[in-house]
Amino acid sequence: VVLAIGLASTPAFARLTRSMTLTLRRREYIDSAICAGLSKFKIMVKHIMPNLMSVLIVQITLSAAAAIITEASLSYMGLGVEAPNASWGSLLREGYDYISMAPWLSIFPGIAIVLTVLALNYFGDGLRDALDVKIRADRETGGGNGRHFDSGQEPADFFQIRRRDDPRYTRRVV
Image (cartoon, rainbow, N blue to C red; front, top):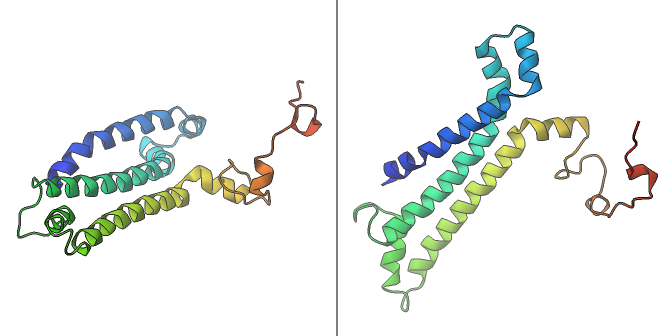
């Protein structure tokens, strides 16, 4: 069952990898690296892979969370892992028969599924923030894209409405 779920999600990874690689290939720093005489392998390792890895890691963690929910759902319906092997879905199903006498038989596997899926999602988000080249560059230069307030700007100041007549926020045409 787990192998089938993994094989079913493989095309999504292939499409994501291809589309991100094609997008990154059109960037100016790739053209600069080609003009500098870097080989295709060095361009791939130094420029494309670091930008691609953060997206793939987030996709892996989200897919793992979805795979856990899918496997638990299939096992709950009786289509998943066979009886001698343990599965959270089969534990939920067995506890359903005794829900009025022993509700913890269903509550604890359900809580385990929810906590595991949430932990995987937060782990993936944290890894994306740690590995994303753009966010790392914004932190190092003091710039920001609105997500991080490392430059001393308070979140309340960031969301204030800008006035049109304020010269600090008007666009200058040269």
